[in-house]
Amino acid sequence: MKIKILIDHHYSLIHQLTDVDCEIKTLTPVKGYENNCNITLEETVESLRDGIAHLDDYVKQAKRRANTNPLYGLTIDESAAIYLYTMQLNDRSFSRMLNEALRYKDQTEVKHYWFNYLRLIWSALKKLPSIKGNVYQGITRRIKEKYLKKQVFTWWGITSCTQIQDNIVSAIRDKNSTLLKIKILNGKDISAYSCKSNENEIVLLPGIRLRVNNVSYNANFCIDEISLEEINDETLESITTLNQTKKCTVKDGPLDKIWLDCRFKDQEGTTIIKPNEYEAYLTEPPETIDESILNRIKGSIFGLILGDALGAHVEFRPHSYLVANPVTDLQGGGTWGLEKGQFTDDGSMILCLANSLVARHGFEPYDQLVRYKCAHGAAGNGVLMRLAPVPLFFYKNPEIAVTLSGISGQITHGDKKAVDACSYYVALIVAAMYGVDKNRLLSEDFYLSKIKNWLKHDPLVPEIEKIVEGSFMKDKGYDAGIRGKGYVVFLRMQSIR
Image (tube, rainbow, N blue to C red; front, side, top):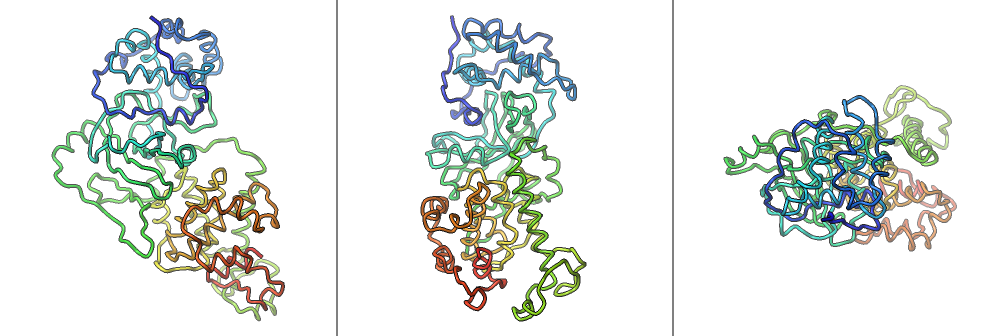
């Protein structure tokens, strides 16, 4: 009897990140693979050779390229077992073949063909430190009817996830898809042991118990979203005794912040996690990045901070004062009485936002909120001055960058004009990251062919629409009405010039 093989001609990491057991099943668990294992990788795949062509060659490649770093005490066979799990075998995905067997009702195939390999990879994964925090999975269909709030269930396969939300969203957006947001306790980061070492990959172990915390529609990405949480035996026991769970909601303002998801330490939702407490969840970012892109990122951040410090001493001074006293160098004193080279609160917000994006490996509105404060109806220019880290972080996905920039604006500035100014500004920055010159960037053709497709929300407010149409193109500058004041619309006009 040959094992069943899943054929997937377009396999990539995204396919792994969308390989999840959609069905909530009750299976008889396979026992015994958790016991200590002293076996080679070659021995574990002996029973698979008839079903997988050239398997010996793939095993040799896995052992040759396996991570031999002794940090966590993995043997060469354990490290190679993880590497093999992530490999694409011609048109076949090793991980999917394993997971098909683990999720199949009849566990005979697992016991006969996969048991020894399962023992080895389990031994490897248990040696890796546990990762806590939020990870993401995606499913290319709608499944919310199967997941009821507060329901507890088991996933039987080895589930691959990512800590970077936009990796998933960009792959499943604009489809009848579902985003899974999973708060985990015991994830295993296999990025350093994967054949795709430059990708972020967290795996969840077989038999993980999950609870459905929320089922909703994500209006920002136009897809269903299911929030899950890993639970241990102690949590599972306490669930049966809880009659009521307290909820903390954000009061609706002029812009309803439906995306704001508070983070709590306890199940009752009474103790909020502070930013410094997120440090336990941090991991190192990928080491590889295009040098030209990195230079643009550095230049943007350095330029913003330096520009803020350069103009700090003349902020809010009238135009006549600036004409009489042109800014030519860093200077102390002035409006805020700062030391020479100090930047203002606008520069601080730039660094707060950049720090949040890097620390959380993604866009976490709540994490940003506790670093700022919000005022409904605010439309100050600080919302634009701090914004650059968002497009710099999400430049690979323009639509996501534009959407999240609007959300970033809402965190502190509740006026729709501020939100739309952010969206358009970010679209320009993303395009500039790819080397689009200024004339083309501001042309009507580029707006209609590119930027308008990225602005997938309500029509721009009239004030911002006029800027898009070219109201900033005035030869006489200040004398023609161009202003660099604190109002976001004025700043948007001035910055484009």
